Image (cartoon, rainbow, N blue to C red; front, side, top):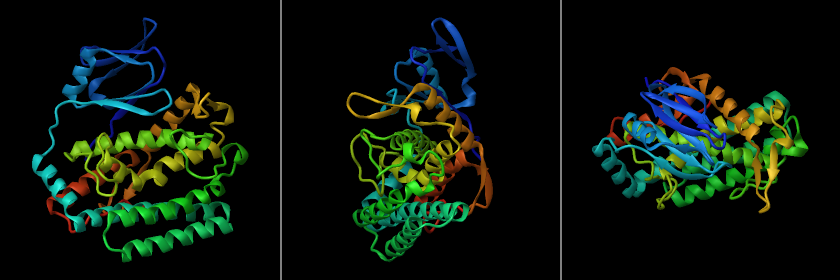
Length: 341
């Protein structure tokens, strides 16, 4: 099984990353803050004004460690990686599946069902732990109805996106019911982004960026092209397949981290600021808290229902990418989405 390696997140502004032999060195104002062996890393994510030497970037390319560059608020800018080494036959199979309307729709259907059932389970857990409400009950019923309609629908990606949107509106319509603390400060009236206009949406957008990074790395790790999606249409510069894969994990991983941070009061409204444009952003100390919680969550182990193995949550995207590759090669009859128990 693939080993869960570390992702190095660097957000202290003015940090300089350089190579020292087989080690990544982080400096700030001429003082060494961190040293990490390159073989312990699977990726480096830098936020804002963080510089990296060309020699370090060359080492990362040689060792298969991708480096992603984001703005200080978490908006993706660029990604550096070495030569593509994926199996060309697998990529050809992926392209053929994308051109096959029925096969494309079937894969998209699996992604949507995985997302809907996992989101429904999150709502059911909330009802079990904190009591029922009309809003939560309606959210669960809506997801149950949409799952049925997805299964009965023709495998058409456009139609599936419409059904997914219905469920998404219902989910965020009862999202506030899952807040048991700081309700006034973190309540939302729906999902908004580009830019987020409230603290919870800013937090979710940040976590979704981290999740997309991990899903893209998982797909590249098995040789799939993250640009060629099945649910999300191909668009220049957009990692459609990574966005497909992360649908299964939005509620399971990102949303649960966000809710835990708020409900346990590990972050509060003072950790956010509003820019002149009206966008809401996290302050640096808050981003550090979120990154620590993110890494800790990824270390938790769960049982994979299809493979029958226990694995860290951080490896789930890699396992799902592997199952998708096996399906595209013809080793499986269908792609089995990850389902939270």
